[in-house]
Length: 94
Image (cartoon, rainbow, N blue to C red):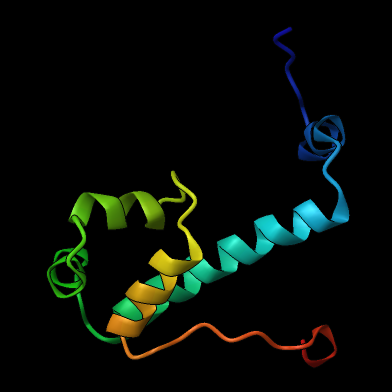
């Protein structure tokens, strides 16, 4: 069935996403955005990060455009090359 939605809220309701799933989606978005900011703060291009990390530039582009869901290992690897690491913090510290 191909339905048209006028408002994001209508589409969101149709998806029936649990709060946990919504949190996971938001976390992935925030991690990717943080990785982009870290790369840009380092004045590094995707190509330069690719060379430093051993990944293909096109793979980094797909991650940054949120076309693929990177694994924790991949994000950790990219962030490490930029001088960062992933960290788990309690929800109460948000």
